[in-house]
Image (tube, rainbow, N blue to C red; front, side):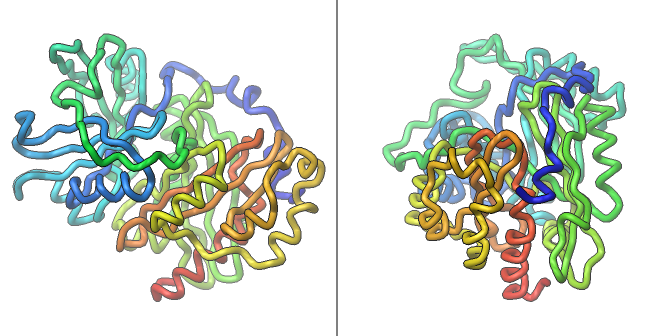
Length: 386
């Protein structure tokens, strides 16, 4: 087992005892992207990732300034939103950042209390507690800003029986490709600027009551050319995890610097989505046109038995199958995990997805960092941004 992996040799439950849970979070409610063309983006996520039509808001429902398509796969809800005129402030976000994540919505039991607790601790308000009603009941939403222009929306839906939110209607479509086995959002990673990581770690601790349960510095996350630092934040019950990355000095430009150059601000770098069968999921995604990062070298797969140690006894997957699909594997004291990363999903080298399958492991693939970042650097070199 690698030295980096051993850095997570503790139970998360013990760490979470230190979290001040004044902000109980029940899970991720939805993730909203601001995009240039929501209809076409929805077709892409349905076709390539197997998301299903779920809900819609637009001109036909009385929305005159924006349109939103809601896609669903198991517990994952993506909202794709596009402005309908040049006066919408959504345009400013798209012009500056390209397509990207605007809202990370968190499911809460009391959106008013969540807003009051976070704003009195220093959060910048985005939306005052607002009651939204229709014939299916009511939803209360509120929101605060986090890094960059990203927003945490608090969603209270215990008195609502509708499809998604008031103002939306069920979206029925004859075109719903088969799901690819994506289950839920495991974690979401944010990239912040130089010297900003500790500021936002403290923000999550003070404002959201999170704890920093895992840290990596530039001595652990580096290659010959570039480096970065990362700290993983989690809420009190461990359901919400937000790793935060910051660039570190290196000979050449790191992936975090590249992201910041093209996103032009701090923002969400990637969504990690969980599956119960990564070989099947990745095989289907490849068949549907999703491109993944280049494979690690042959020596990486030859070294798996040594790195996994005793966990090899419980491993069900064939190493040759993992190699064929370029899936990486790592372990910690609790088990092992399998993971793979897509190439950027848009022309700007910003947002991408991680596909992850946890077999007991609670870490984030520390043993894969070097191989992963060397793979990313090969892509950066082709783009002329290394």
